[in-house]
Amino acid sequence: MKKEQIADAAADLFLEKGVENVTLAEIAAQVGYSKSSIYSYFKSRDDIIFYLVEMADEEFSEIETFIKTELEKDESDALFDVLFDESLQKTYRNKKVASLFHKNIGLIYQNNGELLEKVLYIYNKRISFLAGILKCYVSDEKKAVLVSYLLLGIFHGMDHYKTMEEETLTDEEAYQIMKKFMKRAIGDPKEEDL
Image (cartoon, rainbow, N blue to C red; front, side):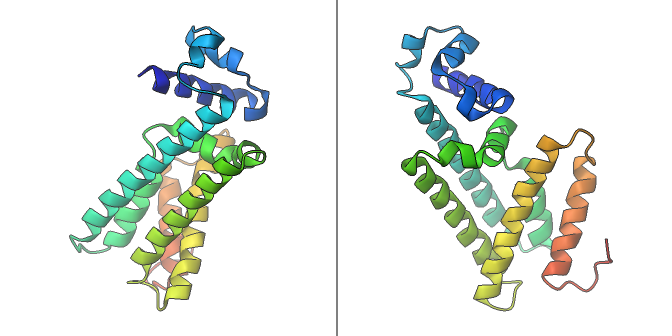
């Protein structure tokens, strides 16, 4: 529990000040610990970031399991209702992890090859997962992979949009726009223009 509290406090500070501007001493002060106490849980600031990335990876895996289970039910329009609603609306229990993962991606990994490799592994895993699902809806494997990149970009874009804009559309309005866009992108002629 303490490890999660420290990581959560660090995520708050990273989002408020930017990853590069936060010290371990500030993180310790945020949770009411001494800097030396933090070392009992994390070796460095990068170690905390790695922990947050691991949290995001676990959450992606949980969502993927849920999506696979729901799609096996083979209900009408299941791909979009499940994939979009679950991935866009419920991908993260901890929205701070989502924002940190997307908003600060360049700054977080520029000096740490191990973190960069972990993030690339997560992205590749997500692309493979999405492409596997989309093969049923897109005419060939190369197109399914391409649409997967587009879809992942939309997921990230939605997180950025909600994080960066002061007055956003409601979640439901934004999700409906993205669903319609993706339906048209993979060739559903029933969808009207946006």
